[in-house]
Image (cartoon, rainbow, N blue to C red; front, side, top):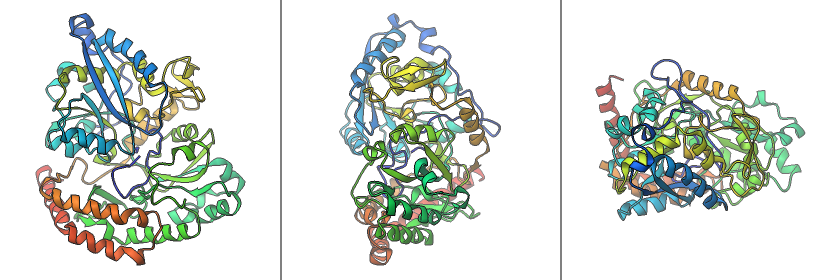
Length: 513
């Protein structure tokens, strides 16, 4: 989860340059699979590279910091892919802040490309599948990528289906959300933070005030223009988003699964009032309403506290790497939870315009079954960008020229090597967390926005106008919330809520949920 949310107005800098990594499903109810599978790809057994015509494949994915050595990594990748499947891969990393806009423009123009990263929260997977942007791969999977098909449990493949068809490959990692604070340990120790007393969001406030009073160069509570409410949905009374664009959802504890406009919920107002209080006290960075990313300040160790919703085992190590080497303490505010959106957080889809969809799937199969290849795109070149400590553990090289810190964007986090400080226990704990997490009452439901697309577009425009200032606390709810709600009504939010409810009720009847 985990998730840099650039395409919605609620939900903070989830995945703020960090990785989801390491997860799988285990146990019963479809939560089983073989995440560490490393068999030779089908392309090797069915046809040698020389028997395949040479092709070139373009792969678009978001990236939140420039990697100077990308071309060197690409060259190393192509030594493997040319030998295995006779394909050259052109890496197309795209700034995370503009990725969705760029890919939507490409799709609208029917531009040729082969593979693109997609998610429920950016470059929307289901929406693009329904509008014909992606190739349907159900028939190709058993033929071209049987190892890949076997490496993930049925639960995952069910979540990937859109109207009964599969259009993507999951970057198989954690499938749960668990919310909470990420805190620099040096400040937690210095100011005596008692983690046992942090149960609600507001409980962290006295600690933030100490940071503000004594650390002039540090941001006590950091966020981007997207705010943080969606990351706190479980902490705030078990809310669950169904449409991120329209900001509607349900209360998970509601047996009737009544769809609501989340902006009108008392939980949202409670969040706004707390953030406004913090903003006026200087606890939130002043540029929060306008800033899209905080990676540079994070890397400089300037963010004392952030909030995320993908706090899986091992996250501390990833955050340390992204935070200038500062140790990180995690304080959860919710239990693990699994839903459709927690599963479909990071995927690769093959473009409908690809001239070589079968070869593209061969590459994705290889990427998720060949450890050397996944390590290359995730960590770079051994000896240059990282050093090997053991058979399964590496140490990243400082200022090496390639450290995207986002295995979650690329492939199977169980397959990639672990970073220094991580261990097999982390993977085992993730597996346990995946298998024991509480499931959504609407797991498997995906909303089709088609019937209300114009209303959602209008609502998004309203969200863009009001969201940044409200969600970051820059203005009070008394100033703008009533107006925000009224403008959403004029834009058609009631019609959207009714349509979501209609589809959800039909899905429940069909699936006997």
